[in-house]
Image 1 (cartoon, rainbow, N blue to C red):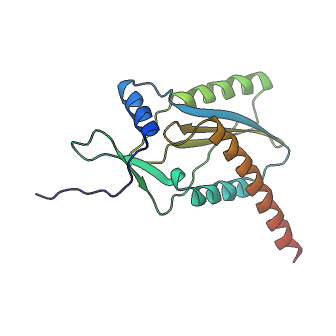
Image 2 (tube, rainbow, N blue to C red):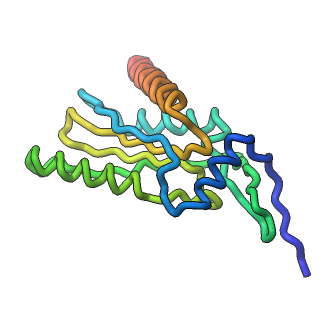
Image 3 (cartoon, helix red, strand yellow):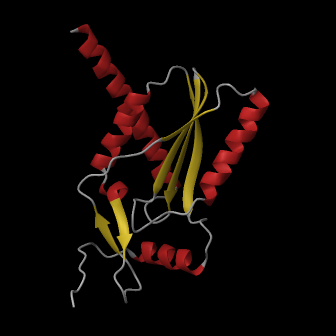
Length: 175
């Protein structure tokens, strides 16, 4: 008989409370989320680079929550690397009213999507293209790893790293 092992870190008292609340209800309401309008040209590669840099920098964005048989509280298991995924949807060809309804429906769908805490880090990013010059970025993070302040700081970091990547690309093109 083989015994399974995992190596990780204990949850903080706040994380334990969120974990048990999440386990008691089938609701996926223990999260923070937002939709953010991006006006102007968006370089998708620069956005992906910025998000990947953030995931590489912050261990919590590479963390899963795993339990072995008999455990009531999981351990935080940090992956060495994790490729961030951006689910992209285009609504460009739809009329404005339909775009608004579809965007609202997708955001609602995102809020209902359960996290797979043992398999993937508890954050989801979706990007809606409304026009070549207008995008909506949806971000959803579990309360196990974030709060509203974290979401605000994450957006500031995305913006900073996105701009840095654009400037680096421009610099490389000039050389």
